[in-house]
Image (tube, rainbow, N blue to C red; front, side):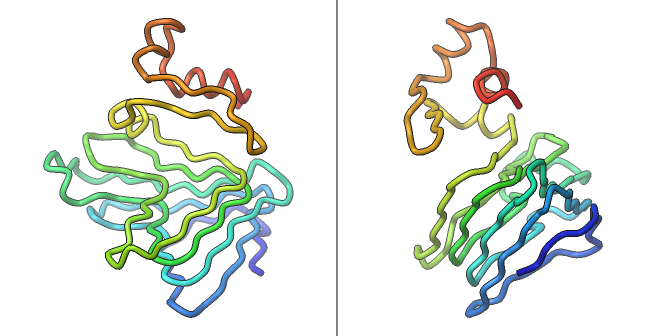
Length: 171
């Protein structure tokens, strides 16, 4: 298990190789990676990666500051998963939302065998939520809190999905 003891700014990307198992405890700390490279992932998981946050308020943040890719052909991701990824806690975010394909987690394995389990935590990028989703599900402790269309949230609540999420979950 890797326990983060202080806030960290990574200077290069991280890969969990196939056949390896890594457990990362954010321990309430922040891990940041700043990059101008298009088509890159902060963390590439080809093995088994589990993310915990024993203290709370831990964050993994990928801050892309490069040029926008208006063709959407070179996506950037906080975590690219081609193995088994389990998220038990923490906030996984991607910042600097330019016109570009960006996702906190890309679970798109070319072999189709990537596994993603989300037991807790928070994924954040308003660009993807507002531009891609037609409907939203809010789940808490395995229970369905809300299932509505993005348009109905905007029309009935006068809020974005992100604003309503923060209201419902008080983040």
